Image 1 (cartoon, rainbow, N blue to C red):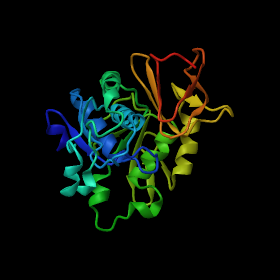
Image 2 (cartoon, helix red, strand yellow; image 1 turned 90 degrees about the vertical axis):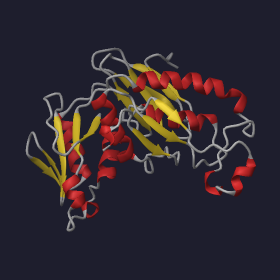
Image 3 (cartoon, rainbow, N blue to C red; image 1 turned 45 degrees about the vertical axis):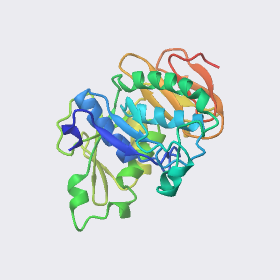
Length: 278
């Protein structure tokens, strides 16, 4: 249904940026529609606050949406002053002079323009994951019992820095997708090789043997950094978003035979191919 809209949109009103709580399925659904229609997408953000969100948190959420093809950002419920709290106490998040950071809102707006530019880029995907419509509608199915529910599988793939796209269950896919995954009762099947896995650990181990990342971010210990979201694009650019509230680094971005790029991330920060390495 979302794909039929001229501008696909989502409610992402809870400002969840912790990998364990991010609405991965919601974001991946709008990403699929945005990429298919090449129209961009809209997200309602921040409405549930909390009311003491910092500009860094607002920026982090905008970039999280942008990483999924969203280039229009709105807050549908924005009280002008505290009187609005009487009627909608759960939605009190004023974007007004009531906020101590209001005078700096222009800088956030300027940065959101850059985020929207990345949102409109053609992202690269190695893995397609079919939306399990039939499984979800089956009265006997309990995908969570296998340890491979859709949200959990998406989270595991993203945190392992695999570029994955959620696609329609019956979508015809070209050879650019090296791996095509489908959830079934009891686990997940990889369609190209007809391999099956009962848990995410087995799948991730298999992926390490079968695929090579075009771009990756490692910590000082040489291991993949888990507290970031990574995106690479057809024009050769990249973007890295911190999903934590603490500084990350030193980090190293690796791109095939290109020189490695050392950098650090401030809390809730963004590092892109337009940034200066630090």
